[in-house]
Image 1: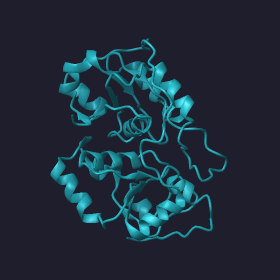
Image 2: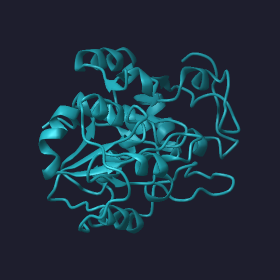
Image 3: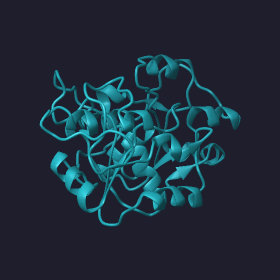
Length: 274
């Protein structure tokens, strides 16, 4: 089974899956309002800031701006949304799947065996003529246990080691990777030795590119050895992890990502092209 589901496929299987709406975007706080105004029928809203992340330290420490959530709190949020291991889950957003893949990764990390991403998200659901439901949804509670550790992760030292001996991918926009501008974090640049595969290079018109195109992208930057991915705060990095998953490749997440890396000013910083 593919981890990617089309809107047309979801239309035919809607009664048999749990659907999570993860509408969140950097510098926006209206995800819940957009959900209430219209969502896939039966979908529960998942708040990235409170359900898929712990509050950051002030200023952010090694955990970054979106630390991985406390396992018990995450599992409780998923149970509230009706998530059980025995029932497939489909996640979506309206941001080219950049937030939805965070939910995908966390559910896999907690041992869920069947989590899929709606290709194209909300926009492509509407294009396919999918029904629209408004207002809140009440679902039967699920039974997902807190069971993290099923996906590989690295810390700052591990990320640096992968950059030296394997392939460390930076999923941020090219101008942030080069250090031309940094609109969020206090230091511009990238982890020395990392290579840039921007999240949005994985998609076209909001949908994931065909497998041969994704394979060509990642083949061009691969150096062999272990692979790990980071971004600004561990959210959009999961998009690159998902693209690699579609190619049958397993890679580690650096959850603290750039915001965690620069929390220690003694760590080296590179600028310019890789």
